[in-house]
Image (tube, rainbow, N blue to C red; front, side):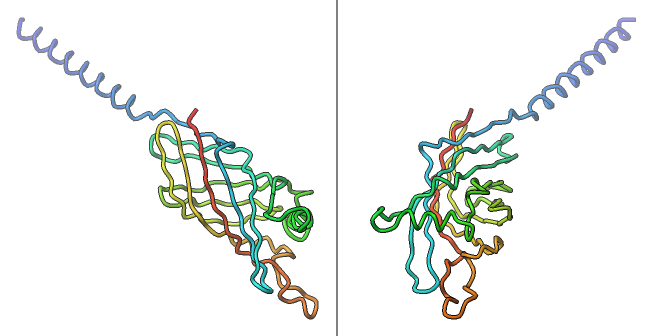
Amino acid sequence: MKKTIFYAASLAFIAFGMTACGASTEENSEETPVTYTLDANATTLKWKGTYAADGHSHNGTVNISSGSMSYKGETFETGSFTVDMNTIKNELTPEMGSEDLNSSIMGEGLFNTAQFPNVDVVINSISDKEIDATLKVAGKEVPAKMPVKVKKTDKELTAKGKFTVDFSPMKAEGFQPGKEPGKETQYIKPDVEFELNLVMKAK
């Protein structure tokens, strides 16, 4: 009789131990998602465009107005940003033609900001050395691989570096050789250079 009671008690103890271990494993496997949101005041995005005709260039800035990235543990989940194209600035003074240059960049021949005021950036993947994204520009999708240095802690995510985006998929008039005789080289090269300093804070 005592052996039977001891055997039953042993089985119960083992069963309890297995159940407890199973619950602990399941609980540990559930990572709490962390979302990083854009620190717009600390983030900068510089650009540089070059003319095909003589190789001269212009540069300036444009603002990233919003953005977020979510992780589950160390695994990237989703990410997106919005670039406000109406915040474009260039290095020229008003006397040198800054307004004319901005009007050209924002015009129908290039980014057509009247109809498409924002560029939506969807993050496909991210590592400590590169961001792979798809840009939705003026109704077209433009792939972009950004070789930047990414650092992530439990409180902050940063990405810094220089990269080039090829805007050829836009098929914008301003990025293509001129069709009129003598104007074949009067266009902006579609390979636009950028310098990103991205700062995001964990919620």
